Length: 387
Image 1: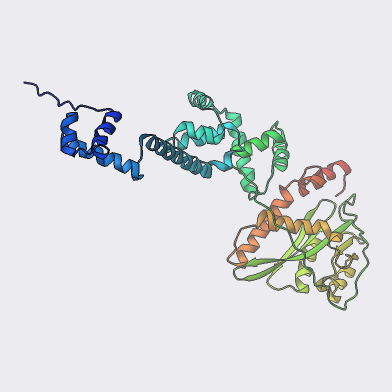
Image 2: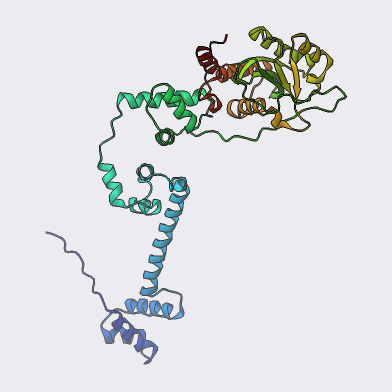
């Protein structure tokens, strides 16, 4: 035999209010009022307590309860939108495909409709994107991706879209800057922010200073016409290191360098001697430097005179008079050594020499028709026949 489910009788609100009014307004007892309207005494007590709480403001009426539920729902939704915005605000200026990928990842945690609204895309467009088949990357595009990543890594995250485009074109890729910029963004390749390079020179001495013979003529038409040299400091965990270089201004090639833990005259002499051994220059080459005590010293000036150099020095506090060399130091520190901590002087030496090889052989220069220094020298050698 099937057990019948008990049916409970429901009463309208007006009926409950009239039954309670018999007690509160007409002087009936609860038992008398319950008998008069045909309900149990306990039920009438519940109605009476409920209505009294509503009238006293201790209990919400139906309209207030509905409003409270709506507000709670709205607050919950706003909290979700706030959380979504925190996670995805950096993507608001990105293309829709990036937003769709974010929505897809977050859809397990938040409703898709709210995600779409916060990210500013339509839900229909998102669902349409989800139905599209995955894009097939051909072999040529895959090779381009790999080469872009390799060049960017080789430059230590310093190669921007302009230089990347030039390098890729030299390797035979037919590509424009807009496409390079788009692909770099797609691959997540972001150039590290450069920092201002500070120039420091100790010119407080009584040594004789040469005139500025170079006069900012940084583009001689042939090699071994004008050289430039300077020094800079490098930080390691073991202490400071000092780098001295010599550059041929014609090709911007670093032809001599030396590193030491002391900033001495011997340091700059070693860099110059290396350049002399490499180039075997004729007499009359202009050698330009700043007014540092190492370059104005008697020993160094004697070395210049011995090999027939014409000394040239920058004006006082005029770092632009040797701007090309200062630019090299800025590239070394801000493109190569930025955020790299060297524990020993030995590792710093190896890293600096690695950059000089990269700078001479690979790094493109807009002033050299987008060639590297060695490439430019070889090109000029073929065209003009100089040796």
